[in-house]
Each structure stands twice: as C-alpha cells, then as structure tokens.
Image: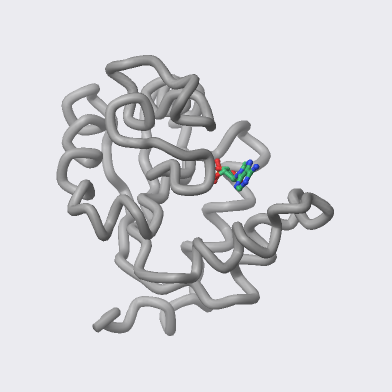
Amino acid sequence: MEKTFLMVKPDGVQRNLIGEIVSRFEKKGFQLVGAKLMVIPQELAQEHYGEHKERPFFGELVDFITSGPVFAMVWQGENVISTARQMMGSTNPKDAATGTIRGDFGLTVGKNIIHGSDSPTSAEREIGLFFNEGVTEYTKLVN
Ligand code: CMP
C-alpha cells in the first residue's frame, strides 16, 4: 500500500492545528502508521530540503523548520501521495483553494502549515530520513 510523509510545520503546531489536520486525513480514509512530535536538528533539515539548497530562501526555510516542534507523520492508503497534496492545496496559501489545508489556514508561502512528499521517490526518501532505527534521539520531549 502506498505511503507518504506529511509534517505539520512549526506554525501549524503552534496554532494547535495538529488535531484538525490529522482529522482531515483520518476522515478521508487514510491510515496513520507513524507519528512523532520533534524538533528537527539542523543537519536533518538541510538534508530534507537538499533540493532547495541553491534557492535564495534556503536559509530562511531551514531556520523556520527548525524553529519549533513539528509533527512528523507517515500516512498510508490508495493514492495517498497525490491525494494528500490535493488536500494540502497549492504551496503558496494565497493560491490554495478554500477547503484545502493551506487555503483554510495559511497566509504566506514560508509559513504554509504543512509539508507533504511530492512523489513516490521523495516519499521513500523522506520516510527514510525521519522514520528509521537511527532517529530515536529525535523523539525526546520537546519541552
Ligand atoms: P514545502 O512543501 O515544505 O517545500 C519547500 C518549501 O519552501 C515550501 O513548502 C515553502 O514553504 C518554502 N518556500 C517556497 N518558496 C518560498 C519563498 N519564496 N520564501 C520562503 N519559503 C519558500
């Protein structure tokens, strides 16, 4: 069964949107198969966003994603990768349709509430980065 990596970003956690977001994917029919609240270490953030290394906003992106706890999740289900992307809405919340997570809760492209893998290749890579034997140290209490 297909799996994807989804993450409520620091702005979503701070605004108490974890429950709302989890609820949407549950109600859609997907199954939560992994989840943890964690503060992302600098090196993991740089690795996760490696494809954006040359972008002018890379520093800002890494600073933001490491600025507070995130809620990292793995979800499973039929076509979960593309369906979750549809449910998230466009990357820039100003272009995201009402009814999508970013359309309903986001305002700016930097603080856009949620991240989701964009392809099977990135899902496999991102699940491997966040959920494997070696990452138990990221699961300690965030406060
Ligand atoms: P995400 O899906 O997590 O993947 C890359 C992120 O880069 C994206 O969501 C946005 O939050 C962020 N991003 C894209 N464009 C910009 C920008 N111009 N300034 C700041 N962040 C950006």
